[in-house]
Amino acid sequence: MQNITRRFPLLIGVILLAATVPAQNSQLSPTDTVRTFYQTMRARKFKEAFAMSIYKPAVEGLSDKEFEDLRPDFEKMAAAIPDKVDLTGETISGDMATVFVKVKETTEKTEQPEPILLMKVNGAWIIGDKENEAIVKKAGKNFFFNARIDTHHNEVQDLLTRITLAQVVYSQQHNGQFGNLAELITAALLPKDLEGTESTGYSFHVIKSADSKSWYATAEPAQYGRSGKLSFYLDATGVKSSDVGGKPLIVRN
Image 1 (tube, rainbow, N blue to C red):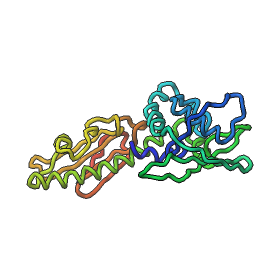
Image 2 (image 1 turned 30 degrees about the vertical axis):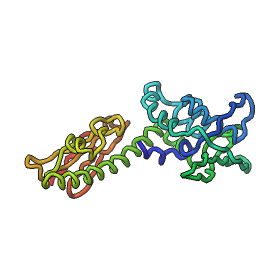
Image 3 (image 1 turned 135 degrees about the horizontal axis):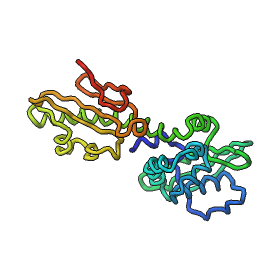
Image 4 (image 1 turned 90 degrees about the vertical axis):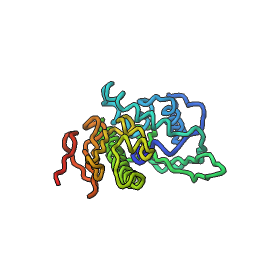
């Protein structure tokens, strides 16, 4: 799920310095708010963490079942937060603030300080800005599901490109014959997790002709409206997609 970082720039890509969490009844500074937010995320106390951010409306209306459905996504967010950073400073301008964090330097890479935006709401600092807050409020409890769907749609496009390239290599190795999904995976040209739906949220199929001289591929959401909405069809002419209620997309040539 590598593209998930594109959807949550405020949640992933920054890390926090281990420190004692300030008392909950004290007024937290912007820096303390960032520190506490990430400590709470790393402790897997997701509802408490999101309550300190603009994402509160996205979780407070979720049923227990919906929250558990999203838990794997939240777990990935928490796992993506490293445990070593420097909080290098903060700036405050009225009800807006910026906290700068810097990943620990390594011999291979030197990270630049990354700004984290905050705003003051009802006297308390929260993670986020007004523009993104409006987006979250509009989507409400569907926000994280919509973000998941967008992520999966992008990933399916990438995986279909990989299938095309895998078929090119496979045909070169098998006298111009193409493979089905199992054969492409056995040849180590595609990842094994395409056999299931857990990591992608989609069910993939690669169908070859009886003489193995042609092929096409399809991908359908494992849970329509939760893991995806678009169904995909791939052949030599390219990729087509449409919302057909989670059913396989049929393309008539």
